[in-house]
Length: 78
Length: 143
Image 1 (spheres, rainbow over the protein chains, first blue to last red):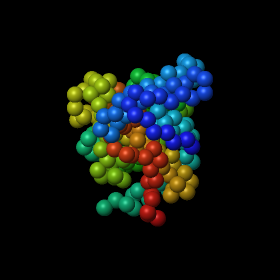
Image 2: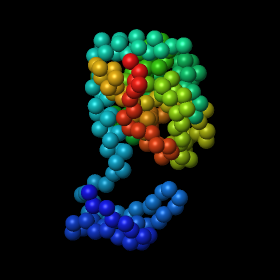
Image 3: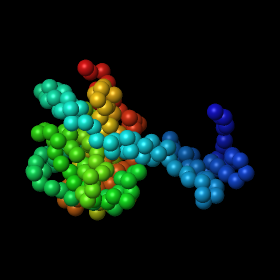
Image 4: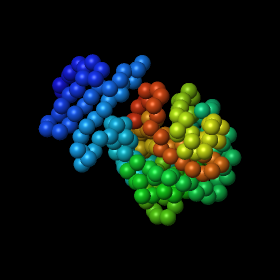
């Protein structure tokens, strides 16, 4: 992992044609501008991870697993 | 957002609620319509089932029994999607991966499914507030 420190308006170039510009810092948020060819997908990481979890979640659990879950939750009731 | 329980409990067990996702669900963008079924009597476990096909189908869970202070904040733009200005009609359910070994089961607190109980519009919203994990263990320190 490469760690680089940048000030606002400074850039990083990846490969031949990807540029990342630190555009603005405000509180705990950083605005990043990305120049890259259209074919290269750019996504927030949590979007990819959510998509991946959704795909895992779309496989229905077996009935006995679901029954086990319901039993455990029933036991938790005050 | 307050607890879902009053909103969810007002949904009859045998009533079919067709819920409309304008953008589908991440990874399943083509499927826009779902039905929501009770899986248990307490309104904690639900099935979010594609309305016109067998798949996809998700187990979704009321997060508040597990995290009583779960706070899913929506931006103005996100509220506008539902045609709302406040959160009174919105209910929050989280996507669950339930494993045979229950201790490995996780829910996505970072990207809840938000449903407007009046308009039946829904969206999976990636929260900007808080530091909620995408894989939160439901039974971390329990049996």
